[in-house]
Length: 248
Image 1 (tube, rainbow, N blue to C red):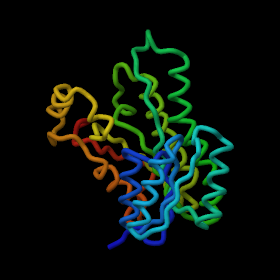
Image 2 (image 1 turned 45 degrees about the vertical axis):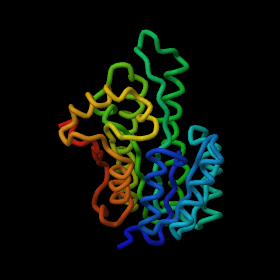
Image 3 (image 1 turned 120 degrees about the vertical axis):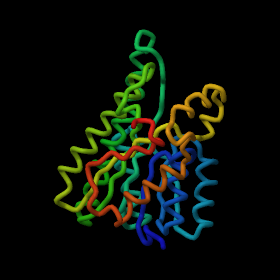
Image 4 (image 1 turned 90 degrees about the horizontal axis):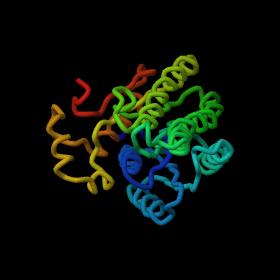
């Protein structure tokens, strides 16, 4: 059963990691995929070809979600190429970790701009299209760190907590037009980036997770498919933790 047949899903930052996993999972459920990358055209082309091989329409766009005009131009281009946008997945994000006493103003500003301003830019850009369609699903990739905080990540935690507040506000603003807004808060997810970490440290983290394993990009992507599909037609303003129980 393809839960997203004939839908168009726009995903920011999907040339690798969780974004790529979401793109592949949505494509396997029948969605046509528009996605962005910032500076990795070769990886983006590989993802585009992989999605097309699944049997859907797909196109990658070089675009900076943290730039207001770039976000609006992206939505215009996607509408011209695909004719509709049913689902927006705000996934693009960065980290610049450090204790507050050592964190520079630039590190704070960069993380808030990329992680938080980008969802304002993209949601505002896609809002008019979804209002005309009188339907839509907006999915924001937050983090358990946005709920629980984490030492050395005050900028990242603030940006991800801000995403949750934004998600709830948009759910209340746009719900009457059948536009839903939800957040996903992943915990420790195994990616190529986490594979570079000290495995003893990773092992200790995993021991603290009730399910005793790291999450996968597929774990996050499956929840994204649920929120993008009509199976979640009465779900809005919520934050779903995909963390193996680490916040329990």
